[in-house]
Amino acid sequence: MSELQIAFVFLGILFTLILIRIPIGISLILVSFGGLWSQMGWNVAWGSLGVVPHSFVSSWVLSAIPAFLFMGFICYHTRMTQGLFQAAQMWLSGLPGGLAIASILGCSGFAAVTGSSLACSAAMGKIAIPEMMRHRYSAELATGTVAAAGTIGALIPPSILMILYGIISRQPVSQLFLGGLVIGVVTMLAYSLMIMIRVKLNPALAPKVGNTATWAERFAVLSGTWPVFVIIIGVFAGLFGGIFTPTEAGAFGAALACIVALLRRTMTWAALRAAMIETLVTTASLMIICVGASLLARFLTLSGTGDALSDFILSFGASPYVIIFGIVLVYLLLGMVLEPIGAMLLTLPIVIPVVAETGFSLIWFGVVLTKLLEIGMITPPVGMNVFVIKGVVGDQVKLTTIFRGILWFLVVDLLIVLLCVIWPDIIMFLPEMMAR
Image 1 (cartoon, helix red, strand yellow):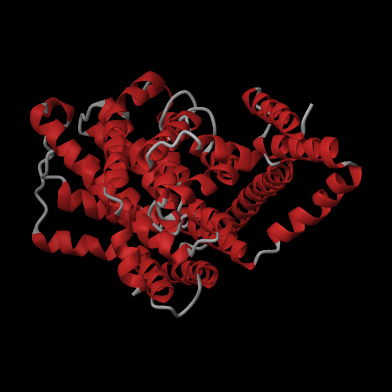
Image 2 (spheres, rainbow, N blue to C red):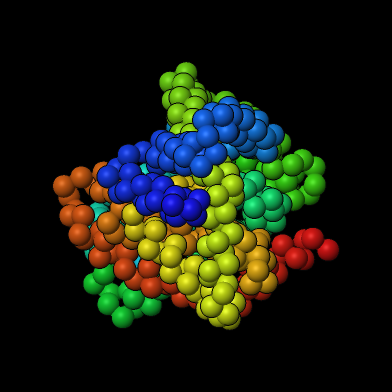
């Protein structure tokens, strides 16, 4: 067998291991090590296992990941974001589907301090779904809204997915953050508009909530939102003002979150301990997957597989748009069975050269890729956000009901992706403007 044939055999083994639910990080490491051993010998394989993990995890930029994670977990465990939903509820409850729209805005605000879809869905699910159900909202609308709104968490900075993509593709993380901010806001507005139209056409989905709050009460409730805005403004102003790098922004944000929690007197030893443990566990899990992906990239490079696949795709001579739509379809399918970070790291060594050849910006692709991976968070059969919401509501709502609830949001997401492919400037105008 040729080196290329052997490489494809090992890729087949990799997908088999993933399908039988072997952890993706372990699968990547085992297959990459085995492939290097079979093609290059024991010394190369063992040497790669010693060099690649160290060279990857020693990257200074990677320290932004645990910093931003710690910032998000501190905000979550010290309940900094509860005031966001309460304020949005009071200001928006008079709109058609106002509580659902408030949930979307609450998730968007939460996203700006966590960068995690699962954390957004879990936190807002506990706060918003009981409130919507109490006002007789459709179970499909209530649960589907929060599950879908949670995906905004990886689009609005800081985004762990975008940090990893920036490191692997060697693109500036701050530019990716700007593009993600645009598409996150577009998603938030599109979701809200869709809910208003649906409720207008079918008022039974969301009975109108009487809003008797005075203007004084509405402005008073805004006082509960200051912790999130202090952290957002502090991190964004320093990052985009050139005061510090994305890595330093993470450290600053984490320190600022701790200070704000202390000022609010919601910081406890239990909250600090939980935030630290979750940060360590999540960071360790991410690093194992990243190390496996780095080993796979070396295996594909040395075996020539990555170049062969790229040349095969480009040999069809299709237009750049056909190639991009093919890549979009691949990620939509992968999102049905793989979690986002695994799907991204598994495919980037092959996909990035192809995208670069099409002439599309790698900044643009990083934002679109993040959007595609987040669509996978609500598509069956995996749909991790959906299962998080199921855990929140328990037996009160069936799993099939939640999946039906996200269908309209999936349609909106696909339309947004289509628009971003046809008009890349939707994403690129802000990064290009700030780069001048």
